[in-house]
Length: 148
Image (cartoon, rainbow, N blue to C red):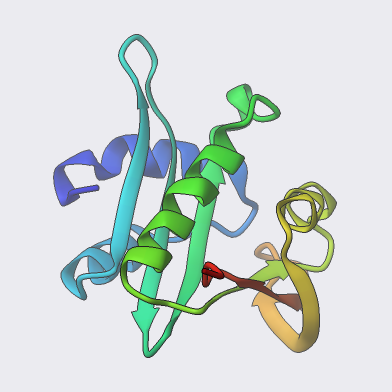
């Protein structure tokens, strides 16, 4: 993902979420050298993307999004496969993420993939403008080390 591709990314982000990331969030992630990947189709363009932050022996998935029009076709799993490959290439033993407690579809994808819920971050996510309060995040983890 590059800054030049952000219009397509933001078009998906704004349809997929009630509180989307901003252009600035994406620019900061790219400028920080985070893993920023696109899932592209020759005829449809950007289908999805992910942003992940490298850490000591771990990776933290910050955003994984599939365009709503093409969800349920294995694209999320394909991007997780790519991210796990990156984790293994960098000797990251663990992959972490937070997901909205109300995002049943994403939580189901992560659990099917092998992520395990390990905790809750209270009041982590903002709610849509005009809605008071905040939403909890479920913290999930996946062991990415291969056993040999």
